[in-house]
Amino acid sequence: MNAEAVMAYSDGMDSQAVAALEGKKLNGRVVRVRIGTSERDISRQERKEMPFHAVPYKVKIAKKDGESSARSRGFKFSLISAMAGYLIDVPVAIVPESGQGALAPVLLPVGHGYEDYRNHPAFTAQMERFVYSLLGYRFKYQFPRLWMTKGETLKEFVDNCEGGSKWHKTRSCWQTSRQIGFNGTRRQCGICAACILRRLSVHAAGLKEATDVYVWESLRTKTWEAGAAKNFDLFTNALHQYSVAGVLHFEHLAGLQGRSDYQLTSRLSNFELAQSLGESPVSVSQKLDRLLRQHAKEWSAFTKDLGPRSFVRQWIRSSAS
Image (cartoon, rainbow, N blue to C red; front, side, top):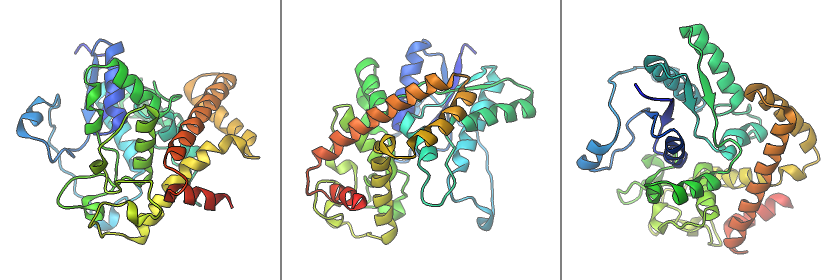
């Protein structure tokens, strides 16, 4: 097969954008590997046009033995990518994650939880060793957008790639329809961390989405409940906590460079990244600093545009007091 890289592919914005951007650089020689069949509401004709072949398999796991943290998703995507590369003798996998998604969960772990390495170069470096031990195959994971924000990636995709206008068909939300179902439509919640990052990135790229993309049609309202679509009634404490956590995660990331412990945090992170990527700590430090400055700039513009009465701005002010 005439391919130079494989890439685990989902319905997400990063997948679509990076597949197109890297495919353009490699003259289309990128093999996309889809995991799962989450496209449930597309037409039969659209399904025929999707460039994927299904490999049937079935795994049955007792409910009590299931893994619910979603951290195993990183292992699943990276291993399937490696298996695809091994089968067609392509030794490179593209990891489409942008900097905020790959690095922030390690720089800012949630509560008392462990750092989330599922999309981090330190994790894929371990996966490279695992794949070699398993298959005797030298395989490499590359992060072409690691030092860019999701907004920068989206803008470059829209400006430079054929099909860039289809970004709005992607999905970012991880909430299930049981949690945010609304009038039988497949909306995204609009207030989990993944949706907040999506909305931030769309704003940073200078783009707009229709209000009915999300259950939370507006982030400008004075109260959290008022931002949801009319007649939505699945308000839960868990959903509220997800919303607050998502907003404050990106607020804290924007303020990370101003924290008293930033130098220590960045030195440890830079050393780990430098080892994993095979780069110098100085180069990594400069790239990380730029990424954090760009995120802070985008976040400031995004939250300012919501207006001073927004419940998002209220949460930010409360966290600072």
